[in-house]
Length: 137
Picture 1 (cartoon, rainbow, N blue to C red):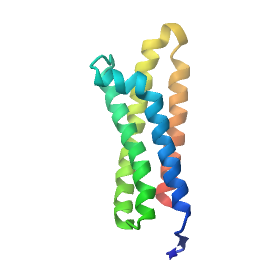
Picture 2 (picture 1 turned 45 degrees about the vertical axis):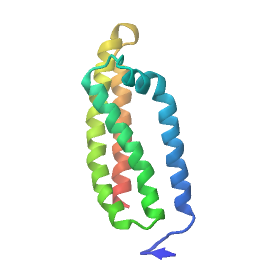
Picture 3 (picture 1 turned 120 degrees about the horizontal axis):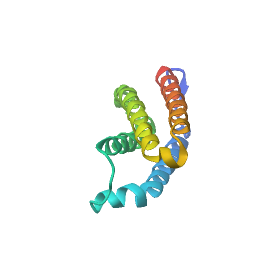
């Protein structure tokens, strides 16, 4: 089936599958260091880290929802959530910078802080560039 100039067929299943893989990876990777300590009340992190974690997890959930909406032809909600996604991406960029500054300060004696902030800045630039490209197309 054709929608505008784009084909809608079996391709959305690929994006749904990749989004689910990303969700599983995130849950697996952060279970022992974030989710379990948070649930048990023993996570020692400033509020900015909790906000950052919530924002990024919301992004991953949005990553699962968006291709699912295309697959089941929820185009209008997909577009609306796309705008929400741009706002969420900007919030993630700010929280990533704050989290990297916290990490750099915390780990400065052992690792030095400049590489942490530089790598986070590069990641933010790449992330926002990809979000912009996705929003434009």
